Amino acid sequence: TGTPSLREARVLLVFAGALGDFLLLAPAIAALRAMGTAVELSVPRALQGLAHDLFPGAAGPPADGAAMRSLFTSEIDPTLAAWLQGAARLDAWLGELDALARHARALGIAGVRRLHVERGEVGPHASEAYASMFGVRPVLPPIPATWLDEAGPRPRGLVIHPGAGAVAK
Image 1 (spheres, rainbow, N blue to C red):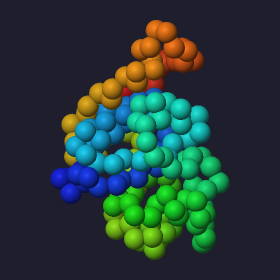
Image 2: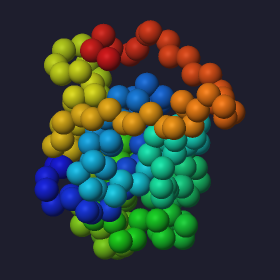
Image 3: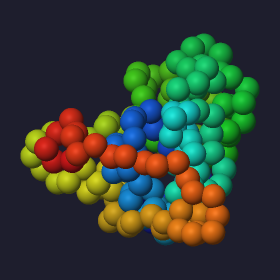
Image 4: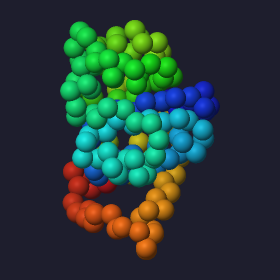
């Protein structure tokens, strides 16, 4: 869980979910970063721009790319192995954990967790549930300055549909 041992640690998040779930996870990522955790993200290609805007810095290969798929094969992609090396923990919203854990152990990562996309009609709000997975309270990520810059180029529009897979979202 997200204990003080994560302070100043390098934690890798491999999130293969969609836009809405990523936005609900963002306050947990912001909370981890606020406490000094070096969080690096691997997200689907469609979310990479948003993820970089909200959480600039080092990032992993796309969660929906060939390199990431090698986590579930006998031989890991060298680019992915280089990103994984030296991490204190790997949290993944991916399938089968055995191959993932085996590769992580071979690269010296002691902590590997398989997390789930928050679903359900009852219980805490999804953003609270994601934050609890890390033992933190959600923090709103800062709005990127480029989004507020009236003189600069405007980012593409973002439309969020009010529907969701669960009422709790």
